[in-house]
Image 1: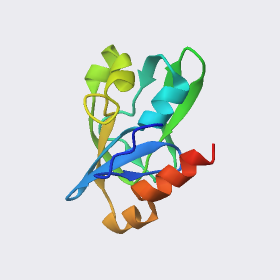
Image 2 (image 1 turned 90 degrees about the vertical axis):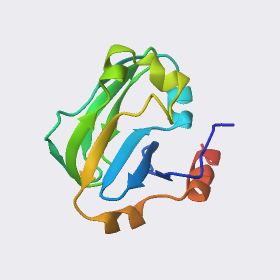
Image 3 (image 1 turned 45 degrees about the vertical axis):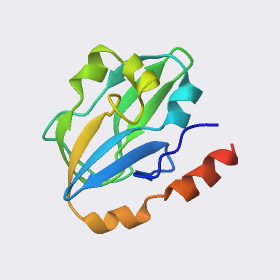
Length: 128
C-alpha cells in the first residue's frame, strides 16, 4: 500500500501539496513514484513562471513512462528543487521530503478547497 500522509492535500493527478501561508510546496505522491518506478529525469518549470491549477508545468521521465506534472494551484513558481533535477531518484527515495518538486506563491488560497483530502486520495488510489 502506498504511503499517504495526513499533513498534505492531494490532486487527482497524484501530486501532493503542502500549504504554508500563501506558499505551497508540491511534489509527486508515493503512489505515483511507485507506479512510475525508477525516475531518471525531471523537467521543472522556470522560477517566475505563472501557472494555472491543472495545467502541465513540467515532465517526469521514468524507465517505464513519461508523465506530465500539473500545477495543483494557480500562482507563480518561486522555487524549484534543483537537487531532484540532478538526482531524480530522490523522488523514489523520499517523495514527501527531499523529493519535493517546486514551490508556488498562491494566487487564491480558496483554490485549495478543490484539492483532495488524504481520505479522498486513498479512495482514489484504491480504485486503481
